[in-house]
Image 1 (cartoon, rainbow, N blue to C red):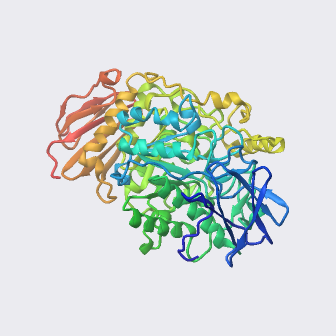
Image 2: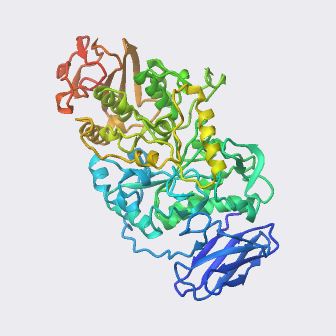
Image 3: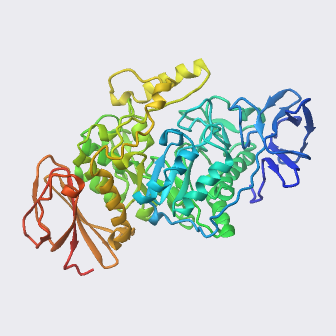
Length: 609
Protein backbone atom coordinates (compact mmCIF):
# COMPACT_ATOMS: atom_id res chain seq x y z
CA UNK A 1 0.00 0.00 0.00
CA UNK A 2 1.22 3.51 -0.65
CA UNK A 3 1.22 6.11 2.09
CA UNK A 4 -1.82 8.01 0.83
CA UNK A 5 -4.24 8.92 3.59
CA UNK A 6 -7.53 7.25 2.65
CA UNK A 7 -10.29 8.62 4.88
CA UNK A 8 -13.20 6.33 5.67
CA UNK A 9 -16.49 6.82 7.45
CA UNK A 10 -18.60 9.98 7.64
CA UNK A 11 -16.62 13.25 7.60
CA UNK A 12 -18.74 16.30 8.42
CA UNK A 13 -17.56 19.76 7.32
CA UNK A 14 -18.46 23.02 9.05
CA UNK A 15 -20.72 23.97 6.15
CA UNK A 16 -22.95 20.92 6.73
CA UNK A 17 -21.57 18.90 3.85
CA UNK A 18 -20.71 15.33 4.79
CA UNK A 19 -18.47 12.96 2.81
CA UNK A 20 -19.38 9.31 3.24
CA UNK A 21 -16.70 6.82 2.23
CA UNK A 22 -16.71 3.04 2.71
CA UNK A 23 -14.47 0.27 1.43
CA UNK A 24 -16.56 -2.47 -0.20
CA UNK A 25 -14.52 -3.81 -3.15
CA UNK A 26 -16.71 -6.82 -3.94
CA UNK A 27 -20.09 -5.07 -3.81
CA UNK A 28 -21.90 -4.26 -7.06
CA UNK A 29 -23.61 -1.17 -5.61
CA UNK A 30 -23.52 0.83 -2.37
CA UNK A 31 -25.81 3.66 -1.22
CA UNK A 32 -26.11 5.82 1.87
CA UNK A 33 -29.58 5.51 3.39
CA UNK A 34 -30.38 8.40 5.70
CA UNK A 35 -32.85 7.57 8.45
CA UNK A 36 -35.01 10.58 7.77
CA UNK A 37 -38.72 10.46 7.26
CA UNK A 38 -39.13 9.41 4.55
CA UNK A 39 -35.77 7.65 4.10
CA UNK A 40 -33.44 9.30 1.61
CA UNK A 41 -31.00 7.23 -0.45
CA UNK A 42 -27.77 8.56 -1.97
CA UNK A 43 -26.02 6.32 -4.54
CA UNK A 44 -22.23 6.18 -4.08
CA UNK A 45 -19.46 6.09 -6.68
CA UNK A 46 -16.73 3.42 -6.60
CA UNK A 47 -13.02 4.02 -7.31
CA UNK A 48 -10.45 1.49 -8.53
CA UNK A 49 -9.36 0.55 -5.00
CA UNK A 50 -12.90 -0.41 -3.97
CA UNK A 51 -13.85 2.76 -2.05
CA UNK A 52 -17.40 4.05 -2.48
CA UNK A 53 -17.90 7.77 -1.77
CA UNK A 54 -20.58 10.44 -1.97
CA UNK A 55 -20.97 14.01 -0.66
CA UNK A 56 -24.28 14.90 0.96
CA UNK A 57 -25.43 18.44 1.81
CA UNK A 58 -27.37 19.69 4.85
CA UNK A 59 -26.13 17.01 7.26
CA UNK A 60 -26.28 17.70 10.99
CA UNK A 61 -24.51 15.91 13.89
CA UNK A 62 -26.54 12.97 15.15
CA UNK A 63 -28.07 12.18 11.76
CA UNK A 64 -28.48 8.41 11.53
CA UNK A 65 -27.59 6.39 8.45
CA UNK A 66 -26.85 2.94 7.09
CA UNK A 67 -25.29 1.62 3.90
CA UNK A 68 -27.37 -0.39 1.44
CA UNK A 69 -25.21 -3.08 -0.17
CA UNK A 70 -26.09 -4.64 -3.56
CA UNK A 71 -29.57 -3.01 -3.37
CA UNK A 72 -30.36 -5.45 -0.58
CA UNK A 73 -28.55 -5.50 2.78
CA UNK A 74 -28.84 -2.54 5.15
CA UNK A 75 -25.74 -2.36 7.35
CA UNK A 76 -24.13 0.11 9.80
CA UNK A 77 -20.91 1.83 8.74
CA UNK A 78 -17.77 -0.29 9.46
CA UNK A 79 -16.00 2.99 10.30
CA UNK A 80 -18.98 4.33 12.27
CA UNK A 81 -18.08 6.96 14.84
CA UNK A 82 -21.22 6.49 16.92
CA UNK A 83 -23.70 3.62 17.41
CA UNK A 84 -26.46 5.20 19.51
CA UNK A 85 -28.60 2.02 19.47
CA UNK A 86 -25.75 -0.47 19.84
CA UNK A 87 -24.01 -2.86 17.45
CA UNK A 88 -27.11 -3.74 15.41
CA UNK A 89 -28.54 -0.23 15.04
CA UNK A 90 -27.82 2.57 12.57
CA UNK A 91 -24.64 4.65 12.62
CA UNK A 92 -24.70 8.36 13.43
CA UNK A 93 -22.71 11.34 12.16
CA UNK A 94 -20.59 13.07 14.84
CA UNK A 95 -19.23 16.57 15.24
CA UNK A 96 -15.44 16.30 15.48
CA UNK A 97 -14.88 19.84 16.77
CA UNK A 98 -13.50 20.29 20.28
CA UNK A 99 -11.94 23.21 22.14
CA UNK A 100 -8.54 21.74 23.07
CA UNK A 101 -6.41 23.50 25.69
CA UNK A 102 -3.41 21.12 25.64
CA UNK A 103 -1.29 22.78 22.92
CA UNK A 104 1.74 22.88 25.26
CA UNK A 105 1.57 19.12 25.84
CA UNK A 106 4.30 17.25 23.95
CA UNK A 107 3.61 13.74 25.23
CA UNK A 108 5.98 11.84 27.51
CA UNK A 109 8.67 9.21 27.02
CA UNK A 110 8.38 5.61 28.17
CA UNK A 111 11.16 6.22 30.69
CA UNK A 112 8.86 8.67 32.49
CA UNK A 113 5.77 6.47 32.48
CA UNK A 114 4.10 5.10 35.60
CA UNK A 115 1.10 3.39 33.95
CA UNK A 116 -2.29 2.78 35.56
CA UNK A 117 -4.54 0.34 33.69
CA UNK A 118 -8.27 0.79 34.16
CA UNK A 119 -11.58 -0.45 32.81
CA UNK A 120 -13.94 2.46 32.19
CA UNK A 121 -17.08 0.59 33.26
CA UNK A 122 -15.78 -0.66 36.62
CA UNK A 123 -13.26 2.03 37.61
CA UNK A 124 -15.92 4.35 39.03
CA UNK A 125 -19.53 4.10 40.23
CA UNK A 126 -20.51 6.17 37.18
CA UNK A 127 -18.83 3.67 34.85
CA UNK A 128 -18.02 6.29 32.21
CA UNK A 129 -15.43 8.86 31.12
CA UNK A 130 -16.78 11.43 33.58
CA UNK A 131 -16.12 8.95 36.39
CA UNK A 132 -12.47 8.78 35.32
CA UNK A 133 -12.16 12.57 35.05
CA UNK A 134 -13.49 12.90 38.62
CA UNK A 135 -10.61 10.70 39.88
CA UNK A 136 -7.70 12.12 37.91
CA UNK A 137 -6.61 14.13 40.95
CA UNK A 138 -6.28 10.88 42.93
CA UNK A 139 -4.11 9.39 40.20
CA UNK A 140 -2.01 12.54 39.94
CA UNK A 141 -1.37 12.60 43.69
CA UNK A 142 -0.38 8.92 43.54
CA UNK A 143 2.25 9.84 40.96
CA UNK A 144 0.67 8.20 37.92
CA UNK A 145 1.94 9.65 34.63
CA UNK A 146 -0.11 7.56 32.16
CA UNK A 147 -3.55 5.96 32.27
CA UNK A 148 -4.25 3.00 30.05
CA UNK A 149 -7.89 2.52 29.06
CA UNK A 150 -9.01 -1.01 28.30
CA UNK A 151 -10.73 -1.13 24.87
CA UNK A 152 -13.55 1.37 24.45
CA UNK A 153 -14.68 0.46 20.91
CA UNK A 154 -18.42 -0.28 20.59
CA UNK A 155 -19.25 -3.79 21.80
CA UNK A 156 -22.58 -5.64 22.19
CA UNK A 157 -24.72 -4.94 25.24
CA UNK A 158 -23.92 -2.73 28.19
CA UNK A 159 -20.78 -4.23 29.71
CA UNK A 160 -17.79 -6.13 28.40
CA UNK A 161 -14.01 -6.12 28.83
CA UNK A 162 -13.89 -4.50 25.39
CA UNK A 163 -12.06 -7.19 23.45
CA UNK A 164 -15.35 -8.15 21.75
CA UNK A 165 -15.60 -4.78 20.01
CA UNK A 166 -16.95 -4.68 16.45
CA UNK A 167 -16.74 -0.97 15.58
CA UNK A 168 -13.11 0.10 16.07
CA UNK A 169 -13.89 3.78 15.26
CA UNK A 170 -16.94 4.12 17.55
CA UNK A 171 -16.78 4.79 21.29
CA UNK A 172 -18.95 2.43 23.36
CA UNK A 173 -22.18 4.38 23.84
CA UNK A 174 -22.44 3.72 27.60
CA UNK A 175 -19.01 5.27 28.26
CA UNK A 176 -19.67 8.70 26.79
CA UNK A 177 -19.46 10.77 23.63
CA UNK A 178 -16.51 11.68 21.43
CA UNK A 179 -16.46 15.08 23.14
CA UNK A 180 -16.32 13.45 26.59
CA UNK A 181 -13.40 11.22 25.60
CA UNK A 182 -11.60 14.29 24.28
CA UNK A 183 -12.40 16.06 27.55
CA UNK A 184 -10.82 13.15 29.47
CA UNK A 185 -7.63 13.35 27.37
CA UNK A 186 -7.54 17.14 27.69
CA UNK A 187 -8.02 17.02 31.48
CA UNK A 188 -5.38 14.29 31.84
CA UNK A 189 -2.86 16.34 29.90
CA UNK A 190 -3.54 19.34 32.17
CA UNK A 191 -2.33 17.14 35.06
CA UNK A 192 0.74 15.83 33.27
CA UNK A 193 -0.89 12.44 32.62
CA UNK A 194 -0.60 10.74 29.23
CA UNK A 195 -3.42 8.57 27.86
CA UNK A 196 -2.85 5.09 26.41
CA UNK A 197 -5.67 3.35 24.56
CA UNK A 198 -5.94 -0.43 24.26
CA UNK A 199 -6.93 -1.36 20.70
CA UNK A 200 -7.78 -4.74 19.17
CA UNK A 201 -6.55 -5.33 15.62
CA UNK A 202 -6.19 -9.13 15.72
CA UNK A 203 -9.88 -10.13 15.57
CA UNK A 204 -13.42 -8.78 15.84
CA UNK A 205 -16.07 -9.78 18.35
CA UNK A 206 -18.64 -12.44 17.45
CA UNK A 207 -21.82 -10.33 17.76
CA UNK A 208 -22.57 -7.38 15.49
CA UNK A 209 -19.61 -8.03 13.22
CA UNK A 210 -20.91 -7.02 9.78
CA UNK A 211 -17.51 -6.43 8.20
CA UNK A 212 -17.66 -9.55 5.96
CA UNK A 213 -20.73 -8.10 4.22
CA UNK A 214 -18.57 -5.24 2.92
CA UNK A 215 -15.46 -7.11 1.82
CA UNK A 216 -12.75 -9.66 2.64
CA UNK A 217 -11.78 -8.26 6.03
CA UNK A 218 -11.10 -11.77 7.35
CA UNK A 219 -9.26 -14.85 6.18
CA UNK A 220 -9.32 -18.60 6.83
CA UNK A 221 -5.59 -18.72 6.06
CA UNK A 222 -4.69 -18.75 9.77
CA UNK A 223 -6.58 -20.38 12.63
CA UNK A 224 -7.33 -18.23 15.68
CA UNK A 225 -8.71 -19.12 19.11
CA UNK A 226 -11.26 -16.29 18.76
CA UNK A 227 -12.40 -16.98 15.19
CA UNK A 228 -11.23 -15.82 11.77
CA UNK A 229 -7.96 -13.93 11.46
CA UNK A 230 -7.84 -10.44 10.00
CA UNK A 231 -6.83 -10.37 6.33
CA UNK A 232 -3.53 -8.48 6.41
CA UNK A 233 -1.80 -10.37 3.61
CA UNK A 234 -4.36 -11.91 1.21
CA UNK A 235 -6.29 -10.64 -1.81
CA UNK A 236 -7.78 -7.18 -1.20
CA UNK A 237 -5.74 -6.77 2.00
CA UNK A 238 -4.80 -3.14 1.16
CA UNK A 239 -8.23 -1.87 2.20
CA UNK A 240 -8.06 -3.87 5.44
CA UNK A 241 -4.60 -2.52 6.26
CA UNK A 242 -5.79 1.03 5.58
CA UNK A 243 -8.85 0.48 7.81
CA UNK A 244 -6.74 -0.33 10.87
CA UNK A 245 -3.98 2.19 10.17
CA UNK A 246 -6.58 4.96 9.86
CA UNK A 247 -8.11 3.78 13.12
CA UNK A 248 -4.78 4.08 14.91
CA UNK A 249 -4.17 7.54 13.44
CA UNK A 250 -7.68 8.65 14.43
CA UNK A 251 -7.00 8.05 18.14
CA UNK A 252 -3.46 9.43 18.08
CA UNK A 253 -4.28 12.50 16.00
CA UNK A 254 -7.86 13.68 16.38
CA UNK A 255 -8.22 12.50 20.01
CA UNK A 256 -4.68 13.56 21.07
CA UNK A 257 -4.13 10.11 22.62
CA UNK A 258 -0.46 9.53 23.42
CA UNK A 259 -0.02 5.80 22.93
CA UNK A 260 -1.75 2.67 21.72
CA UNK A 261 -1.47 -0.71 23.40
CA UNK A 262 -2.04 -3.26 20.63
CA UNK A 263 -3.73 -6.37 21.95
CA UNK A 264 -2.27 -9.82 21.18
CA UNK A 265 -0.07 -8.89 18.24
CA UNK A 266 1.09 -12.53 18.13
CA UNK A 267 -2.39 -13.23 16.66
CA UNK A 268 -1.80 -10.71 13.86
CA UNK A 269 -0.53 -12.83 10.98
CA UNK A 270 1.12 -11.14 8.02
CA UNK A 271 3.52 -12.64 5.49
CA UNK A 272 3.79 -9.40 3.50
CA UNK A 273 7.21 -7.93 2.72
CA UNK A 274 6.17 -4.96 4.89
CA UNK A 275 4.60 -6.37 8.06
CA UNK A 276 1.48 -4.46 9.17
CA UNK A 277 3.16 -3.60 12.50
CA UNK A 278 6.13 -2.06 10.69
CA UNK A 279 3.81 -0.15 8.36
CA UNK A 280 1.79 1.13 11.31
CA UNK A 281 4.98 2.25 13.06
CA UNK A 282 6.05 4.06 9.88
CA UNK A 283 2.75 5.94 9.71
CA UNK A 284 2.87 6.87 13.41
CA UNK A 285 6.41 8.24 13.00
CA UNK A 286 5.13 10.46 10.16
CA UNK A 287 2.32 11.65 12.46
CA UNK A 288 4.90 12.47 15.17
CA UNK A 289 6.85 14.58 12.69
CA UNK A 290 3.71 16.41 11.60
CA UNK A 291 2.31 17.10 15.09
CA UNK A 292 5.67 17.48 16.92
CA UNK A 293 4.20 15.32 19.69
CA UNK A 294 5.46 11.97 21.00
CA UNK A 295 3.29 9.01 19.98
CA UNK A 296 4.05 5.53 21.32
CA UNK A 297 3.14 2.00 20.18
CA UNK A 298 3.05 -0.77 22.78
CA UNK A 299 2.74 -4.41 21.73
CA UNK A 300 1.06 -7.01 23.93
CA UNK A 301 2.20 -10.56 23.25
CA UNK A 302 3.78 -13.49 25.07
CA UNK A 303 6.21 -14.89 22.50
CA UNK A 304 9.46 -13.50 24.01
CA UNK A 305 10.30 -12.24 20.53
CA UNK A 306 12.20 -8.93 20.55
CA UNK A 307 11.54 -8.36 16.82
CA UNK A 308 8.52 -6.16 17.55
CA UNK A 309 10.55 -3.64 19.60
CA UNK A 310 13.83 -3.92 17.70
CA UNK A 311 14.66 -0.92 15.48
CA UNK A 312 13.72 -1.28 11.80
CA UNK A 313 17.35 -0.75 10.75
CA UNK A 314 18.24 -3.85 12.78
CA UNK A 315 15.51 -6.00 11.25
CA UNK A 316 12.71 -5.27 13.71
CA UNK A 317 9.27 -3.65 13.42
CA UNK A 318 10.37 -0.55 15.33
CA UNK A 319 7.56 -0.51 17.91
CA UNK A 320 8.33 1.31 21.14
CA UNK A 321 7.57 -1.17 23.91
CA UNK A 322 5.92 -4.43 24.90
CA UNK A 323 4.21 -5.99 27.90
CA UNK A 324 6.42 -8.55 29.67
CA UNK A 325 4.25 -11.28 31.16
CA UNK A 326 7.17 -13.29 32.48
CA UNK A 327 8.16 -10.74 35.12
CA UNK A 328 4.63 -11.16 36.47
CA UNK A 329 4.72 -14.96 36.24
CA UNK A 330 8.09 -15.21 37.99
CA UNK A 331 7.05 -12.84 40.80
CA UNK A 332 3.57 -14.37 41.19
CA UNK A 333 4.89 -17.93 41.42
CA UNK A 334 7.46 -16.97 44.06
CA UNK A 335 5.21 -14.82 46.24
CA UNK A 336 2.03 -16.96 46.06
CA UNK A 337 3.50 -20.46 45.63
CA UNK A 338 1.14 -21.20 42.71
CA UNK A 339 2.53 -23.71 40.19
CA UNK A 340 -0.47 -24.69 38.01
CA UNK A 341 -1.13 -23.65 34.40
CA UNK A 342 1.64 -21.51 32.95
CA UNK A 343 3.07 -21.02 36.45
CA UNK A 344 4.56 -24.51 36.17
CA UNK A 345 7.39 -22.87 34.23
CA UNK A 346 8.14 -20.60 37.18
CA UNK A 347 8.91 -20.67 40.89
CA UNK A 348 12.32 -20.04 42.41
CA UNK A 349 14.11 -16.75 42.84
CA UNK A 350 16.60 -17.49 40.07
CA UNK A 351 13.81 -17.06 37.51
CA UNK A 352 12.73 -13.73 39.03
CA UNK A 353 16.39 -12.70 38.98
CA UNK A 354 16.53 -13.66 35.29
CA UNK A 355 13.54 -11.40 34.60
CA UNK A 356 15.21 -8.50 36.39
CA UNK A 357 18.31 -9.02 34.27
CA UNK A 358 16.89 -9.88 30.82
CA UNK A 359 13.16 -9.02 31.06
CA UNK A 360 12.23 -12.34 29.44
CA UNK A 361 12.75 -15.41 31.63
CA UNK A 362 12.75 -17.85 28.71
CA UNK A 363 15.41 -16.83 26.19
CA UNK A 364 15.90 -20.15 24.39
CA UNK A 365 15.66 -22.80 27.09
CA UNK A 366 13.04 -25.60 27.30
CA UNK A 367 9.60 -24.62 28.60
CA UNK A 368 7.74 -27.43 30.37
CA UNK A 369 4.39 -25.70 29.91
CA UNK A 370 4.88 -25.00 26.20
CA UNK A 371 6.70 -28.31 25.66
CA UNK A 372 9.33 -26.69 23.47
CA UNK A 373 12.40 -24.50 23.48
CA UNK A 374 11.18 -20.96 23.78
CA UNK A 375 12.22 -17.32 23.52
CA UNK A 376 15.18 -15.21 22.48
CA UNK A 377 17.35 -12.72 24.34
CA UNK A 378 16.13 -9.11 23.82
CA UNK A 379 19.39 -7.62 22.57
CA UNK A 380 19.30 -4.16 20.96
CA UNK A 381 16.52 -3.13 23.37
CA UNK A 382 16.32 -1.08 26.56
CA UNK A 383 14.63 -1.91 29.86
CA UNK A 384 12.21 0.98 29.36
CA UNK A 385 10.85 -0.83 26.30
CA UNK A 386 9.49 -3.49 28.63
CA UNK A 387 6.34 -2.92 30.69
CA UNK A 388 6.02 -5.05 33.83
CA UNK A 389 3.27 -5.51 36.39
CA UNK A 390 2.22 -7.32 39.56
CA UNK A 391 -1.38 -7.51 38.32
CA UNK A 392 -3.30 -6.55 35.17
CA UNK A 393 -6.73 -7.23 33.69
CA UNK A 394 -5.59 -10.55 32.18
CA UNK A 395 -3.72 -11.92 35.16
CA UNK A 396 -6.60 -11.09 37.53
CA UNK A 397 -9.63 -11.43 35.27
CA UNK A 398 -8.60 -14.73 33.73
CA UNK A 399 -8.55 -16.45 37.10
CA UNK A 400 -11.65 -18.54 37.80
CA UNK A 401 -13.05 -16.06 40.34
CA UNK A 402 -11.16 -12.95 39.20
CA UNK A 403 -9.47 -12.78 42.60
CA UNK A 404 -6.73 -10.23 43.20
CA UNK A 405 -3.56 -11.08 45.13
CA UNK A 406 -4.73 -8.69 47.86
CA UNK A 407 -7.27 -11.35 48.92
CA UNK A 408 -4.59 -13.99 49.56
CA UNK A 409 -1.35 -12.19 50.39
CA UNK A 410 -0.49 -10.51 53.68
CA UNK A 411 -0.08 -6.73 53.74
CA UNK A 412 3.70 -7.19 54.05
CA UNK A 413 3.79 -9.45 50.98
CA UNK A 414 1.74 -6.89 49.00
CA UNK A 415 4.28 -4.20 49.90
CA UNK A 416 7.12 -6.49 48.86
CA UNK A 417 5.42 -7.11 45.49
CA UNK A 418 4.99 -3.35 44.98
CA UNK A 419 8.65 -2.71 45.82
CA UNK A 420 9.85 -5.49 43.49
CA UNK A 421 7.96 -3.87 40.61
CA UNK A 422 8.79 -0.23 41.30
CA UNK A 423 12.49 -0.89 41.99
CA UNK A 424 12.82 -3.04 38.86
CA UNK A 425 14.36 -1.55 35.68
CA UNK A 426 11.11 -1.98 33.73
CA UNK A 427 8.31 0.53 33.13
CA UNK A 428 5.76 -0.23 35.88
CA UNK A 429 2.05 -0.77 35.27
CA UNK A 430 -0.48 -0.81 38.11
CA UNK A 431 -3.92 -2.34 37.74
CA UNK A 432 -6.77 -0.18 39.04
CA UNK A 433 -7.21 -0.48 42.81
CA UNK A 434 -3.85 -2.18 43.30
CA UNK A 435 -2.45 0.90 45.01
CA UNK A 436 -4.71 0.49 48.05
CA UNK A 437 -5.21 -3.30 48.03
CA UNK A 438 -8.66 -3.50 46.38
CA UNK A 439 -10.42 -6.69 47.51
CA UNK A 440 -13.27 -6.72 44.98
CA UNK A 441 -12.60 -9.19 42.15
CA UNK A 442 -12.19 -8.27 38.52
CA UNK A 443 -14.08 -10.98 36.67
CA UNK A 444 -14.79 -11.72 33.02
CA UNK A 445 -18.17 -10.20 32.06
CA UNK A 446 -20.21 -9.88 28.87
CA UNK A 447 -23.72 -8.87 27.84
CA UNK A 448 -24.29 -10.66 24.55
CA UNK A 449 -27.79 -11.32 23.21
CA UNK A 450 -27.19 -14.55 21.24
CA UNK A 451 -28.00 -17.64 23.41
CA UNK A 452 -25.79 -19.99 21.37
CA UNK A 453 -22.88 -17.58 21.64
CA UNK A 454 -23.35 -17.32 25.42
CA UNK A 455 -23.29 -21.10 25.80
CA UNK A 456 -20.13 -21.42 23.70
CA UNK A 457 -18.49 -18.60 25.64
CA UNK A 458 -18.81 -20.33 29.02
CA UNK A 459 -17.68 -23.66 27.58
CA UNK A 460 -14.71 -22.00 25.87
CA UNK A 461 -13.51 -20.43 29.13
CA UNK A 462 -13.81 -23.77 30.90
CA UNK A 463 -11.53 -25.39 28.31
CA UNK A 464 -9.14 -22.46 28.14
CA UNK A 465 -8.29 -22.63 31.84
CA UNK A 466 -8.48 -26.40 32.40
CA UNK A 467 -4.70 -26.48 32.94
CA UNK A 468 -5.09 -24.49 36.17
CA UNK A 469 -7.20 -27.21 37.83
CA UNK A 470 -9.37 -24.59 39.49
CA UNK A 471 -12.22 -26.07 41.47
CA UNK A 472 -15.79 -24.91 41.11
CA UNK A 473 -18.16 -23.76 38.40
CA UNK A 474 -17.04 -21.22 35.81
CA UNK A 475 -19.01 -18.06 36.68
CA UNK A 476 -21.53 -17.03 34.03
CA UNK A 477 -20.05 -13.87 32.46
CA UNK A 478 -23.57 -12.80 31.44
CA UNK A 479 -24.68 -12.48 35.07
CA UNK A 480 -25.18 -8.79 35.88
CA UNK A 481 -23.85 -9.42 39.40
CA UNK A 482 -20.46 -10.45 37.99
CA UNK A 483 -20.09 -7.01 36.42
CA UNK A 484 -21.36 -5.13 39.47
CA UNK A 485 -19.09 -6.89 41.95
CA UNK A 486 -16.09 -6.13 39.70
CA UNK A 487 -16.43 -2.39 40.35
CA UNK A 488 -13.82 -0.77 42.56
CA UNK A 489 -14.83 -0.19 46.19
CA UNK A 490 -12.57 2.87 46.56
CA UNK A 491 -11.73 1.88 50.16
CA UNK A 492 -8.42 3.71 50.07
CA UNK A 493 -7.35 2.36 53.46
CA UNK A 494 -8.21 -1.27 52.60
CA UNK A 495 -4.62 -2.29 53.39
CA UNK A 496 -3.23 0.31 55.84
CA UNK A 497 0.02 1.89 54.70
CA UNK A 498 -0.07 0.36 51.20
CA UNK A 499 -1.12 3.44 49.25
CA UNK A 500 1.40 5.62 51.08
CA UNK A 501 4.09 3.09 50.18
CA UNK A 502 3.10 3.13 46.51
CA UNK A 503 3.13 6.92 46.52
CA UNK A 504 6.57 7.01 48.15
CA UNK A 505 8.14 4.42 45.82
CA UNK A 506 6.72 6.10 42.69
CA UNK A 507 8.21 9.45 43.76
CA UNK A 508 11.47 7.71 44.74
CA UNK A 509 11.65 6.05 41.32
CA UNK A 510 11.22 9.39 39.57
CA UNK A 511 14.01 11.20 41.44
CA UNK A 512 16.78 8.58 41.86
CA UNK A 513 19.25 8.56 38.96
CA UNK A 514 20.02 4.86 39.63
CA UNK A 515 16.37 4.02 38.91
CA UNK A 516 16.37 6.09 35.72
CA UNK A 517 19.08 4.13 33.93
CA UNK A 518 17.54 1.70 31.42
CA UNK A 519 20.70 0.43 29.69
CA UNK A 520 20.93 -3.35 29.70
CA UNK A 521 24.68 -3.42 30.18
CA UNK A 522 24.92 -1.60 33.50
CA UNK A 523 21.52 -0.70 35.07
CA UNK A 524 21.20 -3.95 37.05
CA UNK A 525 24.31 -5.49 38.59
CA UNK A 526 25.56 -8.09 41.05
CA UNK A 527 22.42 -10.19 41.47
CA UNK A 528 22.75 -12.75 44.26
CA UNK A 529 20.31 -15.17 45.90
CA UNK A 530 20.67 -16.51 49.42
CA UNK A 531 18.08 -18.00 51.79
CA UNK A 532 14.99 -16.59 50.00
CA UNK A 533 16.63 -13.17 49.66
CA UNK A 534 17.16 -11.68 46.21
CA UNK A 535 19.77 -8.96 46.24
CA UNK A 536 20.85 -6.72 43.37
CA UNK A 537 22.22 -3.27 42.63
CA UNK A 538 20.83 -0.44 40.53
CA UNK A 539 23.35 2.00 39.02
CA UNK A 540 23.05 5.20 37.04
CA UNK A 541 24.61 8.65 36.77
CA UNK A 542 26.92 8.29 39.79
CA UNK A 543 24.10 6.95 41.95
CA UNK A 544 24.21 3.39 43.29
CA UNK A 545 21.57 1.49 45.29
CA UNK A 546 21.64 -1.95 46.88
CA UNK A 547 18.21 -3.61 46.96
CA UNK A 548 17.38 -6.60 49.18
CA UNK A 549 14.08 -8.50 48.74
CA UNK A 550 13.19 -11.18 51.30
CA UNK A 551 10.56 -13.57 49.90
CA UNK A 552 10.83 -15.91 52.89
CA UNK A 553 8.59 -16.34 55.91
CA UNK A 554 11.51 -15.81 58.32
CA UNK A 555 13.80 -12.90 59.03
CA UNK A 556 17.22 -13.34 57.43
CA UNK A 557 20.72 -12.19 58.27
CA UNK A 558 22.51 -10.36 55.45
CA UNK A 559 25.78 -8.61 54.67
CA UNK A 560 26.63 -5.97 52.08
CA UNK A 561 29.83 -5.68 50.08
CA UNK A 562 29.50 -1.89 50.03
CA UNK A 563 28.73 0.36 52.97
CA UNK A 564 25.17 1.63 52.78
CA UNK A 565 22.77 4.20 54.17
CA UNK A 566 19.27 2.74 54.66
CA UNK A 567 16.75 4.82 52.74
CA UNK A 568 13.75 2.49 52.51
CA UNK A 569 12.32 -0.50 54.38
CA UNK A 570 8.87 -1.77 53.40
CA UNK A 571 8.41 -3.17 56.93
CA UNK A 572 8.84 0.27 58.52
CA UNK A 573 6.18 1.44 60.97
CA UNK A 574 5.44 4.41 58.70
CA UNK A 575 3.93 1.88 56.26
CA UNK A 576 2.05 0.16 59.12
CA UNK A 577 4.66 -2.62 59.19
CA UNK A 578 6.24 -4.44 62.17
CA UNK A 579 9.23 -2.10 62.23
CA UNK A 580 12.62 -2.24 60.54
CA UNK A 581 15.29 -4.63 61.85
CA UNK A 582 18.12 -3.07 59.84
CA UNK A 583 20.39 -0.30 61.19
CA UNK A 584 20.45 3.12 59.56
CA UNK A 585 24.01 2.60 58.33
CA UNK A 586 25.60 -0.73 57.36
CA UNK A 587 29.33 -1.31 56.92
CA UNK A 588 30.82 -3.93 54.57
CA UNK A 589 30.65 -7.47 56.03
CA UNK A 590 28.50 -6.22 58.94
CA UNK A 591 25.61 -8.62 59.61
CA UNK A 592 22.12 -7.15 59.81
CA UNK A 593 18.56 -8.49 59.66
CA UNK A 594 15.76 -8.13 57.14
CA UNK A 595 12.13 -8.83 58.02
CA UNK A 596 10.09 -11.60 56.34
CA UNK A 597 8.35 -10.46 53.12
CA UNK A 598 10.09 -7.12 53.00
CA UNK A 599 12.22 -4.91 50.78
CA UNK A 600 15.27 -2.88 51.86
CA UNK A 601 17.07 -0.20 49.86
CA UNK A 602 20.51 1.15 50.75
CA UNK A 603 22.31 4.03 49.15
CA UNK A 604 25.90 2.99 48.54
CA UNK A 605 28.15 5.49 50.31
CA UNK A 606 31.56 4.38 49.01
CA UNK A 607 30.70 3.50 45.41
CA UNK A 608 33.11 4.40 42.65
CA UNK A 609 30.24 5.36 40.38
